[in-house]
Image (tube, rainbow, N blue to C red):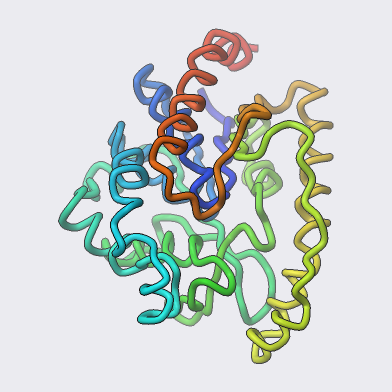
Length: 285
């Protein structure tokens, strides 16, 4: 299997759906030669690349009620609702060890999308940009740093934020990198469309030193909705295989209800299980 990409949308805690999808793929030992994700998609994609089935589920369900993971106390202490040091240092190094050796041994490509705060453009990183284990954690951390509730992340000479801001579903990047076919995992149900951002005054105040971020926030709904229309065209032509949750999705971006998260995980798992034979046939075409 070559020239096939796996494209992973973000979506905060809704990304637990993606975890279910990826765990089933790992169960079937199906690994793609190219994986690209933004925000939560980058997080879950990393455990797929390191071939650690079940790890992302444990991280995102078992620890979500831990105040070190998400709480307003974190926001007051470290300018982030999510405990970023806990998530990207304590968990991968101590509580749920990330297999760096397997990750860097993966034969395919792994790309993380971020937003460059200085230009307002997408900036992508792969493993060749990493000089250490900490570098990959920092890149994924940057991609997962949501506006307003997470601080800007510095990596080398860049100031970075949530990759979903300017390239929420990085299908065009995957195609530009040579993938004629793509499996796309979304975290919103069919028919969803993003509405215009209404906090312009807050964005201008919050990001007064980064006007490009303000512009990105204002344009985000158009970029997202245009990408969905593009995906419809690609699906109609048979160039993508689309997986997404159904209309019963009831999980917030910062959801802490473990039962809801567990249910959404299994929805993702069952979605992929039901579609797996169709996916295999599509890959053989």
